[in-house]
Image (cartoon, rainbow over all chains, first blue to last red; front, side):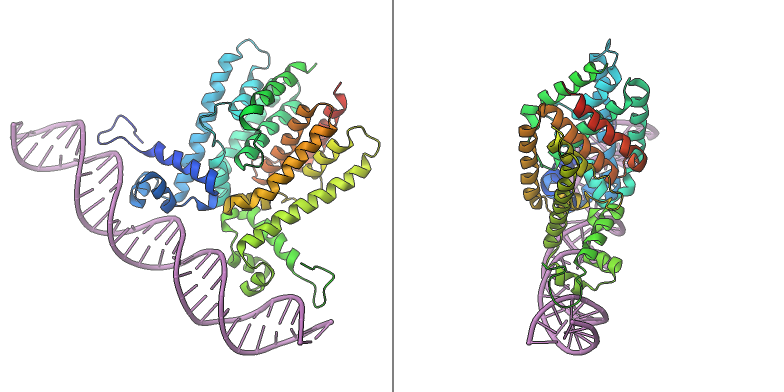
Length: 186
Length: 186
DNA sequence: ATTACTAAACCGTCTAGTTGGTATAGTAAT
DNA sequence: ATTACTATACCAACTAGACGGTTTAGTAAT
């Protein structure tokens, strides 16, 4: 609950979550175990379970952080497109496409949760539905918005599953194409 | 290996694969076990292992059937768009979007393989790359084709993960929008 | 005889979760 | 300044059950 304020040593919570994401990306969601996670972080199983009382809690935390990061990124893009009539749509799309190379494993949490306990996705579903309503409201062509939304997430998931390496190089071009399609709508 | 040709009783191979897909969809890839599969199909573990010598073989078969079904569907659509200049693109997209309500769990195999053993996705990656080359070759605007390709697969995966229920109702409208966008390119 | 199984026991390994204990650092009264 | 206490952040060892897979023995249709 407290990363900096409290007494004692600094928390490894985020270190653990990072390692969990990487593990899912490289080995598959089924091999995300406390043992493997312990090896990856050099933290004992007991230590891990101190931070996340159960595996479901860990998955929950992964999803939560993923949504939070996405939300923050969207807000950042909102400022970039301040005077654009398609500010909302563009921000949502670019946030999800997430041009930042640094956090590549955006969908690890999603896939891990889906694999281990699909019920954990409920809050995620709510978040998606909210985004859809937002698209419906702020877009001149909601159906186009939906297509582009799915395109971004399709690309992200395909990358995560390593079904294509369109990654770095084409990413910029892909993003530009999306923005152009938004601006070209008449 | 033989569903109809061989002697003896008809094989339960496809029954097992169907059940496996449904299990993944409803319970998550991590809960696809021989025990659970045996319960779902009323086939003993011995029986299951008679058909699929290992779990990897089972996952392999799931992927294989998925690709084959997709391929067949694409061929069917190719006939529907015989004189269309965008025959290839349209067929690929509609095949993957897969309007058939009957086989809803198209991506179960994908998610199960990704969760349990990502290395099994290698042939799938090859298939995707081949599709990309095909898109590059037969499309006037390859980047648009890519966007629409990812849109279709994004929608499919979101549906599979139950992140949205855009399913039946909007599916037709979604498909129509895709086709319109293809035809509108200048 | 071959194909397609069933039923049940069994094995080694893996896994989530428990227990009980330790170390570090800050708080606060004396 | 020392003592006592609290909270955080762990670790090592263990347990019960699940899982993949094997084996054995038998059945029943073609």
